[in-house]
Image (cartoon, rainbow, N blue to C red; front, side, top):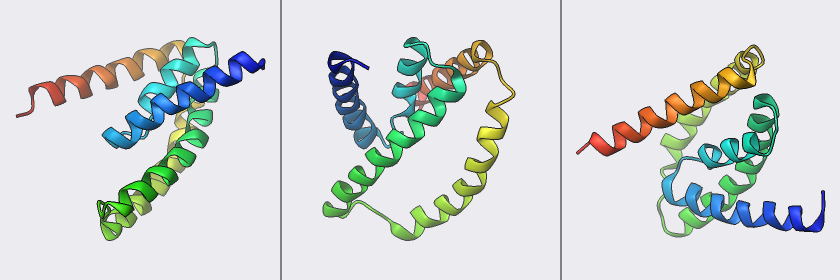
Length: 120
């Protein structure tokens, strides 16, 4: 990876970090499409995204904690359920081609956008 590409990834991380900590969506909704655009397989894009999201999430948690915006009990309960889902997800995505993954991901993003747009 060239110095220019590394700088571009860091700048992309800044934008994704702001979006993730602002929306609470974790950043994967931006990172995965970017990695797919760069030619990564769906499986590699998702896995790489989770490593970056881990780092971003820890930083965002620290910032939100300073503002007293964290419900630790609720977060831990959601996290326990998320552990189970996080073990099932990679096994499922392993059986989906990158082409199909792109379509599924697009449908999820459009449905989420429609819900947020329509919700009062």
